Image (tube, rainbow, N blue to C red):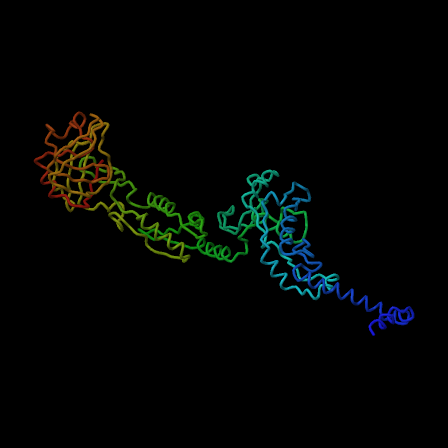
Amino acid sequence: MIKERVMLIMNPEFIKKHIKIILPAIGVSILLFLYLLGVWFFTNHFVPNTKVGSISISQLSVKNAQEMIQTELEKSQVILTEHDQEIGYIELSQLNVVSDTEQVLQQLLSQQSAIKWPIYLFISPQGIDEIDEYVAFDSGKMEALLANIGINNDEREASRDAYIGVNDNGVYEIKQEAYGQQISAVSLESALESHIENGNNKLDLSTAYIQPTIHQDNQAVVDLQARLDQMQNVVITLEFAGNSVSIPQATISSWIYVDDNQEPQINTDAIEQYLLELNKEYASLFQTRELESTYQGLVTIEPGTYGWYIDRFTEAESIAAEILAGQDVTREPTIGGSGYGLALSEDIGPSYVEVDIVNQMMTIYLDGEIALQTAVVTGTPGTNTVPGAYQVWNMEEDSTLVGYNPRTEQDYEQPVDYWIAFDDNAQGIHDASWQPYFGGDAYLQRGSLGCINTPPGVMPEVFNLVYYGMPVIIF
């Protein structure tokens, strides 16, 4: 029976009669075989038109695709351009380029549909568009490669952040950011990775320029400028001893600066210097006086340590705080010293010590009356007693004077029974048992180093009459 069927099929008449059915059946069978073969193959290989970036991995296994990607990356060459001119090129192999794509390729393979492989002959499947996160360079080699090309950041203009600066009028204002041409190795690496994705072999260096990070519309910069405006325009008026002094705004502006943390600061040293000049103009500490003396009549007294003054150290801190607060203020400054509120002609008062260098006499006044007079020995020429208005600031009994004698060029220690200090240069009043006599021209031959040598028999009474803060007037 089988033999009869075979003979029937092989019969030319049968074939001729059924050829239209047989040929399509054979074709379908072949196509089905090829399709199933493709399904089997693309279960472990990437379907047609699969790409990683611009690199085709069609019909490759994961392992072969990895190798293909690495090979193509190493072969890649990027031409560097700047201002439309080619300035060099970089081969990625020079940067020890490494791709780590195994995991993402496995994931991509698992997501593709092998049964749809014929469709991908005509349309692209889902590939990997961004390859940069799977590519790494040896960052240490980038700067060396740039140097070999002739790119030296030290010779290129740097970008600059927007900042607060001073204009020609001494006023703070926002200075716009500036764009330079220094190259960021990190940005250049990112640009290279991007070019790997799109297959572009040219790279404009301007895409890797180091950019300013702070722009003129940055809120922190705008806020800082607003605060500086307020600080620069603050009005500070100092009222003292019948005077009213408003600190010039240009002067205040010159005290303001911005530190590295972009915080406004005040130069207190400059404020102290300003107050020193103010003291020299107004404070009695720095003024000459006239005194009706015991032996010479009206004499001029040079400034010394006696008188009132603006405490520039305390006051500088107060003014700095007021500028930072940005609020107008009118007030009396912190005053130090003696005689504040009194006219210069009256601030010494009726009780004081008078030392007349010309007549070598010391007179002590209490409440306008002479309480004691004595001859003295003052400083010899070369170590003169310094004239001026002083005040007693220290009193000791059984003291030892120590110092350096420029005449003998030796240090000395000299015990005394009484010591009254009145200036800040070691001048004072003390007993001098070594002097054979006092007054006259004794100071020319045996004068002191500047102190007021007083007879030992008189010194106890001097010590009892004098008190802390008592003016000592030397002329």
